[in-house]
Image (tube, rainbow, N blue to C red; front, side, top):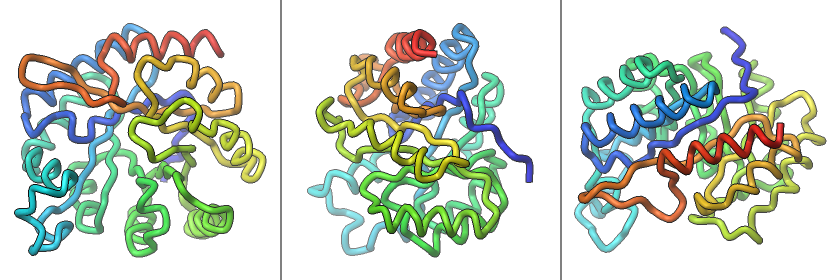
Length: 258
């Protein structure tokens, strides 16, 4: 396996910001490619895969009172749609990344030849999924919101035992995260506990909070993740996603801290 250098990688999380609209997703990717080239950084676009037929219990598939289910169902894309999006990421000179939420999605990632797998915080203790991920021998980035120290240790032990090329991401699973709850000191604590592992910062704070990335860098974070999107007359951004102008400023303030 090629050992990926995670340092100075900026991850743009597309998540559901494509709104289930292929052209809108392509426009976001193109805008992130432009910002990335203008700033001379290494960027990657991250998708999220979940197989809704099995991920959502049949009794709840049509339940529109549960916001997550409604969101997942209303923004679904086909595998062929994702193939087009993945190719556009490559055309824009960026790295392809994906979070699988189930084992079947790991197979889809391989089929689309996506380069990096990202483990969501909610999956960091999902042993069957982790086994599936490390079994395909690709670089792995793991978000760690809500993990206890014992869970951290078990996760790192598991990944090392399986010879994974991996990085850890400090993360707070509050959307958006108030500035007083960012807990950026944990970046330094993770670095001290696992000094041989690259540590990053997966952000959910307001897009107008530009000091957090500078503090995170000072604490030792070396890769960064932001939810991204673009607004138009049809679609609005959520409170924790950045538009291209905000991403450009985010990259600028990072450079000021280096």
